[in-house]
Image: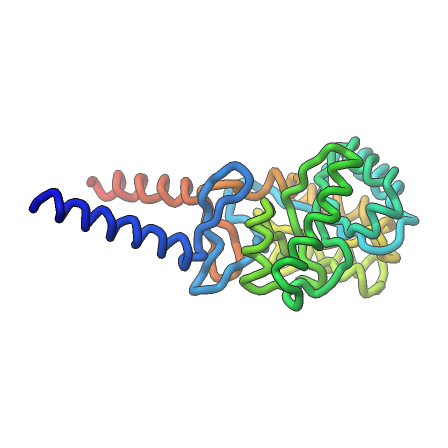
Length: 272
């Protein structure tokens, strides 16, 4: 009788576990078989910024059109000893393979911006995978790099976009500071927009474009301005948490390890 009950409870446990895996959606495995959560109130969120005590920000460039200023941007980054992240479309990779190699050799992150710069939320799951893995394979063939950072075109995403990216080994990355360089307002506008942005803080991700008209002209002053504010500029791969994290409602990535440390400290302070 006891054995029969034990078998029943074991079977119930297996069924319950299967349902959690099938329906949960909150926890997925990302390159390395580590469980992470990007689900907040039933919504899958990309990473807009990172909660950190370290005074670090990430500078990123979307590369979907134009290439006149790429080498100049790389020269400025090298001069200022800064590494950043470039999110590239498949078309850009195919058109400028030497620049992709140069970006990689300079130590910058290579990021995925989809193959054809389409609205990912409007595509089927199969098409989403094709958009990701087509450019992924091109970059891998060119540089040997297995990309894991994805920025959806137009910032367009829904639950399926984020989950599909996870299933393909990608962290979906947005931004919390938009330089608005794509509006071509001028050098001063880019610098002032970023340095005085209300969201600029530890863990911010800054959006720029390598093909915008005034970005290269503004870049060195922008870098100096960020450094004067005390920020270290790092690639997104060095800013984000790769495991043991969850998101807040604003898409800010929070380390579960940090939360545990704070709980331990609180318990100690309370004399527990």
